Amino acid sequence: MDNAKNDAVRMWLVKADHDLRAAATVAKNDTGLLDIAIFHCQQAVEKALKGFLVFSGEPFSKTHDLKTLTLQAAKYDSGFTALVEVADSLTPYVTRFRYPNSDMPRRMNLTAHFPTLSE
Image 1 (cartoon, rainbow, N blue to C red):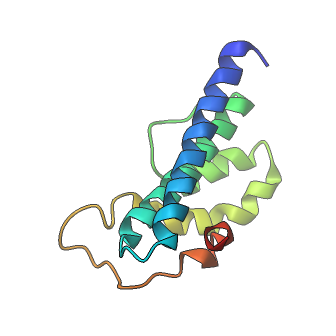
Image 2 (image 1 turned 120 degrees about the vertical axis):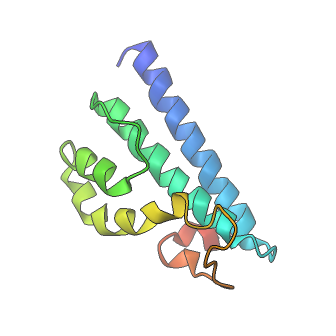
């Protein structure tokens, strides 16, 4: 892999890692900021998928649609097929709780899909 491509993949994955760590930090604390945690979970998945697509040489459109990105990734690794449903379920969280008057529940079980959040 050439240096530019390597750098691009690394940048996507570093950002994905930062989002996941932010989600874990917020979710572990009793801050009531679960809307922020789930947003960062969605962002971590999106950025990790985009990093994989860059690695695979697959162009992608400017999108937050995790189902689309996961299906694209599945063209290069069939293991992504098993993740389509959970990825699709996360897509709405890129905007769902970002604005006032959203239907944010008091408690969300983020660890059901992201067990590392409980570590």
